[in-house]
Length: 253
Ligand code: PEP
Image (cartoon, rainbow, N blue to C red):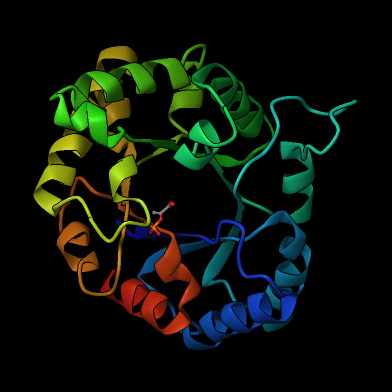
């Protein structure tokens, strides 16, 4: 099974030229058939440009994703972008429920589950992010926190919809800190996530569920996660903006 490597560029880079440079580097170096499914999620503003570059290069090595979308199809929602718009552009994936959106922008699991539904309806694959804060881990309550977050983020999601969801385990204390979660621990959580999903949607769905790990991934630690069968890939933040480093991570997969 192909591993999935997702690049979350967040609100970077600052100039479109730099976005093009990073993307061109990837396309140039991933021309041949890659063993990984690579999904680049740039800021909305860069999507069109990068899609045009991709079309011109005829590269199939990289797919594009978004970092967010809205929970309604259309209408008076100033500043929002609908999943249909993304799909119409040729976007295939969307990151939803990232901890930066939950904790900085005040998103909650209720709206995230609505976004998941709408994204699937539009034909996108949602990458649902979950992860515990440092305090919960310190208190020994990480698993309780994660179970609650999974259940609430998937509330109202049907079995058919659940089959289309990818879950990324991103412990908040590991994001952007260099303090990555050891692969053994991440594996234990990946299996726990599958158990929670199994209780709600059945063993078959849990078995085929793709669980990614994210949090301070670099070219040195990527392999320890990728060699775990129950970890289907990686969600990469800052290292995905360093094209050489990111390429190394992809090649590890
Ligand atoms: C992220 O925010 O999704 C992430 C994994 O960031 P980083 O790789 O920089 O820790």
